[in-house]
Structure formats: structure tokens, C-alpha cells
Image 1: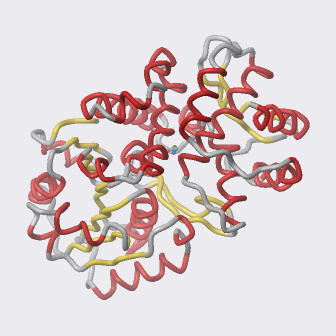
Image 2: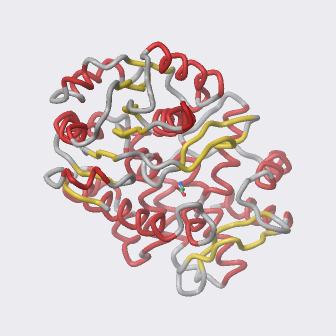
Length: 361
Ligand code: GLY
């Protein structure tokens, strides 16, 4: 459920998303409703210098022991996880304690996973500071770490006690972080309401209009929440949220392994184009929506250093995707009515052709 911070009672329902002007004040109000002994704050070294300002209004969060992890997807690993658990030990957390995750998707994924396993599971609250974490990572209860070069290979479904979203931290985001999160918002347009996509692709207008940004972000969160509520453990419907992610994760993993890491949303933005091409070729999706998306992608996201010699590795990565079902690589694709179909099997030959078309666009 998405609500304004005025209705703080919603925080008693795990998974609630609360819009707030002030993260700290809203957190303080929520904590007042939650019986707890200790708190610990998980954040990263980019956000840590801003933590006092962001948490202003919550004296207990301001004075909580801080576990500061190194920023970046390459640190969403078991070594950092162990350091976070050591931080929880040092903070003497108990089963009545609450972890506050303040940061982007790495912090909310890893901090949520650390809390979900610690003493068989303690509560956590997400305070996303990036558009990506607000639109996707901190909503819906997926927590975890990367392992063996695979994204989110180890993890559990565990709902935060609440996710508090304020758009104010996004004003200072570097452009690449803004565009990263924006890709997940556009994804929600494709999977939940295609009629919104045309307006969403006008990113310059939305980036410069806080009310318009809040409107598309609210839409993305509400649409995701509705899907997660219907299928919390991804038995069927929730798979549509992986639109753009099958190729996207492969791009992301390949480039990360080469020390040329890109943002998650940039990878998803490119993966969406691969999915649109495959939807047209395999599921009868009309071709007309591809061209505006190509313009959006090329104007706002860097081209990826991917050549045809990379296809075998990319296709192997896609075969390793934990969301595959049965033969071939499973994709979420759009049909002739621009509605998502989950688990469409795509052959290696179709993937190769689609990657060629993607690179030619
Ligand atoms: N990020 C996709 C999901 O939450 O299911």
C-alpha cells in the first residue's frame, strides 16, 4: 500500500511504502509504533556523509551504530555481508532490534538480506536514496547478494517493515544514477500500462518537474506493489517485473566481470530494447513502439561495449538466469496488444539474431 506519511499506522503492515517530505521525521513516527530495543544503520560510503542530514528528525536513528559498506555493485557480495553481520554483533542487535537501510539498491538488497538471516530474521526499514532503489529494489521484498558472477544469486524474500520514499535525495543524484532508476519506471509502464509509456519517454520534462517525477514514481511503485501483492514469491505474475532484465542482467554481469561495470538501470534500459525486438519477432508485438524507445535509449544511455564475439558469454549468462523455466532462455515479452507474457522460451538462434538487431539500432 502506498500512502503519505500522515497515515503512519500503515507501518504496522510489512511491505508498506510511505511517501514523506522528511525521511527522518517519517522514520521517527514509524519507529514510535514499533516495539524495539536497538537499531543499527546500514549505509554506504557515498551516503554516509549525508546520513545526518537525511535522518534529521529521528534522534534514535541518528545515534544508532552505523555499518558503512563500500559503495558499488561489486561489493554486493558475501565478504561485505559478513562485515555487516559483524556490525550487527558489535551493535548487540537482538530479535527485537530493527535495521535501517539508508542507501541505494545495493544497501537495501544486502542490508535487507543481512537482517532477514540474522538470528533467523529481524525487522528492517528501507530508506532508499536513489531513484532505482525507490522505484524497484527496496519495494517488494527481494533481498540478496551477487555470487559466482551472477546477480542476486543468493537471497530470500523478506518484506521491509516499511519503505519510506522522499524524492528530495534524488535532486542531488548524479545523472547516471537518475537514468538508472528511471529505466525501472519505464519498465513498469511497459508491463502495467503501455498507454503511459509515450509520456514517460519524455524524460527531460519529467526530470525537471518534481511533481511529474513523483507522479510516475508513485505509479511505478503502486503498479509493482499490486503485482507483488498478487504473487509475492514470483510463482507466476511477478515474473513480468523481469521485463528487460534477462538480457539486462547478462549485459550487467558481463561488463562487471570485465571491470567495466554499468548501472543496473542502464543494463535494464538496453535489455528492454532486446525484449522489444524479441516481442516483435516472436509474440506479434507491433514494430511501431520500437523506434521511439530506440531514440530514448540512444539519447539517454551510453552504448555498451558489446560485439558479436561476446554473444556466447552473454547467452551462457542468460542460460544461467534463475528465472529460466524448461527449455531455452525465458523472457518476458509483449504481445500484439502490448501486454506482457511471462516465460516465453527463446532459442540461442533467436537470441543471436535479436542481439544483432539490437546492436544495429
Ligand atoms: N525487481 C523485480 C522484482 O522485484 O520482482
